[in-house]
Image 1 (cartoon, rainbow, N blue to C red):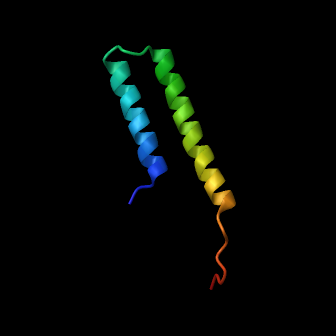
Image 2: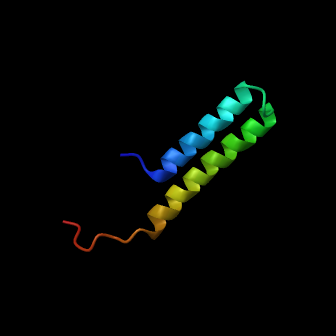
Image 3: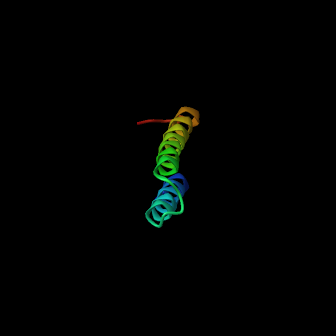
Amino acid sequence: MKSRKFILALLSMLSASILCATGHIADGVYSAVVIATVGAYMAANVTQKATAKPLENPA
């Protein structure tokens, strides 16, 4: 099962790709969306791992 963060990032990239392919947004806007999406996804993963509770009994 995919995480909500992954699905949101995937949908964001897909919509930006479609908009760029159809000419509704420029290449520069597409590149900014890609950079922001990847950065936000990575930051969310790091934050999730940093704030996760450790296992109480790691056997």
